[in-house]
Length: 328
Ligand SMILES: NC(=O)c1ccc[n+]([C@@H]2O[C@H](COP(=O)([O-])OP(=O)(O)OC[C@H]3O[C@@H](n4cnc5c(N)ncnc54)[C@H](OP(=O)(O)O)[C@@H]3O)[C@@H](O)[C@H]2O)c1
Picture 1 (tube, protein in one colour):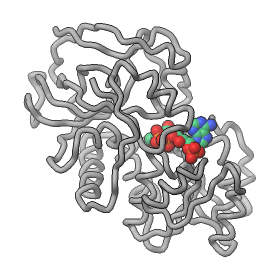
Picture 2 (tube, helix red, strand yellow):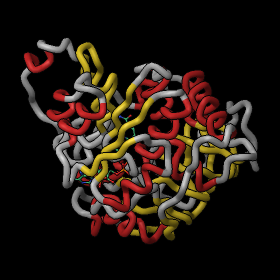
Picture 3 (cartoon, helix red, strand yellow):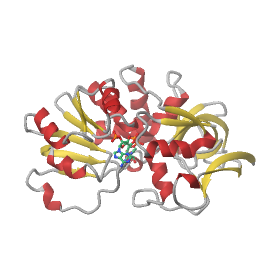
C-alpha cells in the first residue's frame, strides 16, 4: 500500500465540491498496473460525473469518488498476470480515478506512449483523440468527398476533429462562440468558421453549401445546437450528437428526421473501444496522425492537481480554446 493524493468529491455539485485528499492505494491486483500520473486530462465527462449527470454510460459510483477518466504516467508496478507492461513504461490510459498522483488501472485500459508524443499531449488529447478516431474513421468515414460541420470548433474535441477531417481531405466548417475562437479554428484545419453567438449558423451553413447542407455534423454542444443541426444537414446526411456541453438534447419528435431521411446517432467512446484490441488500434491511428505532423495539439493551460476546481470552472465558462491538463 502507498499514500497518494487525489481530487475527490463526497457529494455531487459545483466545482467547490472538489477537495484534495490523502488516500491509500493498495498494491495492483493480478490484472492491474499502478501508474504514477504525470499529466491528467480534464474532460467534460468529469463535469458530468461531478454534477451527478448519469444519463450516459457512466453509472453512479459509491461516494467518496476520485474524479478523472484519463492521464499519462509511468508504470510503477504491475499485477502478477499482467503481460506486456513493466515498471518504467510511459503509458496513457482511459479509466476512472485519474485526478490523483497515483492510480490503479486495469491493464486492458492502458496503451504505451510512443517517444514522439509528449505526456501533456496524452493527458490533454488521448481521450479526445480516440473519440475523434471512431467519429471520423469508423462511425462516419470522412473523405475528400465530405463536407463536415463541427460545433465548438476551437474546443478540445473541435481542434482535433477539424484538423483530422482536413487531413482526410474533407471541406471543414466550424462554429464557435467568439472571434478569438474563430481565429483559433481557422489556424487548425477549418476552411470556414461561423460565430454562432452573432450569426445564424443554419443559414450560413446552407449558404456555404449552396443550399445542400453538410454531409455529416459533429455536434458536441447538444441542447443549443441539435435542432439547428437537423436543419442544415443534407438529405440522407448524419447528425452525430456526441456531446452535450450546453445541456442534454432531451426528447424530440422522430418525425423531424423523415423529410430528409436524416440519420441521428448518440455514440460514446466506451462502446467504440470496447476491448483491448479496439483500444490499441484506435490509439495507433491517433499516434500515427500525430506523427504525421498535420495535427497540432496545443495545451490551453497546465494547472497543479490541487487546482482542479479552477480547471473545471474554466471549461464550464467557455474560456478555454484548447485542453487544460492537471500536473501532480
Ligand atoms: N461521446 C463521446 O464519445 C465523447 C468523447 C469525448 C467528449 N465528448 C463530449 O464532447 C463535448 C466536448 O468535449 P470537450 O471536453 O472537448 O469540451 P470543449 O469542446 O473543450 O468545451 C466545450 C465547448 O462547448 C461550447 N459550448 C457551447 N455552449 C456551451 C455551454 N452552455 N457551456 C459550456 N460550453 C458550451 C464552448 O465552445 P464555444 O464557446 O465556441 O461555443 C466550449 O468551449 C462534451 O460534451 C463531451 O462530453 C463525447
